[in-house]
Image (cartoon, rainbow, N blue to C red; front, side, top):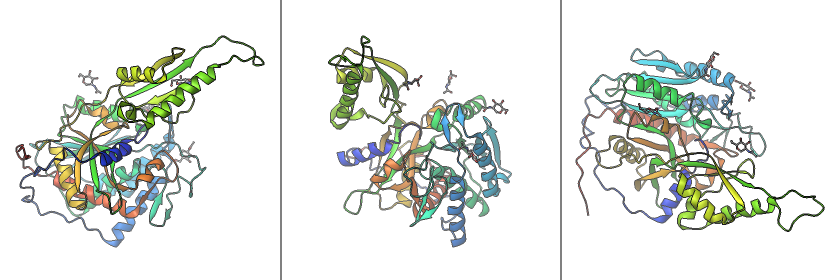
Length: 438
Ligand SMILES: *[C@@H]1O[C@H](CO)[C@@H](O)[C@H](O)[C@H]1NC(C)=O
Ligand SMILES: *[C@@H]1O[C@H](CO)[C@@H](O)[C@H](O)[C@H]1NC(C)=O
Ligand SMILES: *[C@@H]1O[C@H](CO)[C@@H](O)[C@H](O)[C@H]1NC(C)=O
Ligand SMILES: *[C@@H]1O[C@H](CO)[C@@H](O)[C@H](O)[C@H]1NC(C)=O
């Protein structure tokens, strides 16, 4: 996930703030009666070992995006070879078309047997943020397994999704699965630094082909493991916050350091920044201002939309000597439907309830981080961001941080989830009409 993975935080606060507006609809009607027998999501011991070894191998390829212009293209090319090697059936199935886009991104078109059904798309990304060795229990690109966890950069963001999608498809194909509904798999290579050469090019290609998608599923919120006493909630993110990068600047009259003025530019700037930190702790609108570690004191990043935020930021700082420069900004994404008619949302809900029966609540939420999915706005109105992965709240900071890791069990469940989801996508039953329940 580009910038910070703060969907998690949003989910947590949503969890604590309450459980209002939970849809109790029946979701999709008649999904049991599919024409083909379902392939059960059970895997042999051998397959489960192969699954986790494949993820470890993916982690070992350092597909780092250092900056928009500096990607490890050697690793990206190697990754393309790697997926060909570990998922041979995906690459040798007659109804699957594979294309490389923007040199390192991958687009798979899986042609279903019923072309009257509108296709959908699964997204994931290949690149990861840098990971210096310092602070890690194991080297970040070792993919080592310790105490039931696979460690490494990308185990949560987002090679877990990427590998799980291809893995689930591979396992379905070797059991002779043929989808009824067509779908796409798009794997971007520069999500962490814009998605301009990956997701954006794939989107343009599909737009040129006149494709319209029923919905898109991308990375996003996790399932919060709140412990036995807490309600388990699962937020499917139906929107993303906008983003704004602000530069704060203070100009003071130059002078000699031996006779500093009472207030220096650094002092004024530091005071302004610390007011943002305090604002982040407050409730109300201030809660949405996330103060984030930034590379330099002058480049601060906030994740909310933009003009109102600029005003809010100025109010917080309340110091005319501080100048605000907007470096870049974009508005929040439109809200995708989550009602009874929303096929993508209902399919997710159905799959969550079957794979995670212990999850009490499925509800729409907002993703404060940004993902590649924003490049697909022209193709669909239904964009859903989620990771079918349990996460301890304390693991949030490992994403883009140190000791990023996924439990082997959580990864197997993610494969199982996608294995089920793809089959659920074959339903030709329309979502049930909306019923108001009071
Ligand atoms: C880029 O990836 C290759 C492996 O594909 C690796 O050998 C090399 O060290 C990486 N370079 C950087 C700067 O991380
Ligand atoms: C793809 O590779 C070609 C040849 O190396 C290069 O000219 C082009 O700029 C690359 N395109 C992207 C999007 O990286
Ligand atoms: C702040 O960010 C801008 C835009 O990314 C960059 O041009 C500038 O060099 C940065 N300034 C500092 C002090 O890092
Ligand atoms: C969406 O479509 C419009 C109109 O065709 C086009 O101008 C715009 O660039 C497209 N946006 C994206 C992100 O593809």
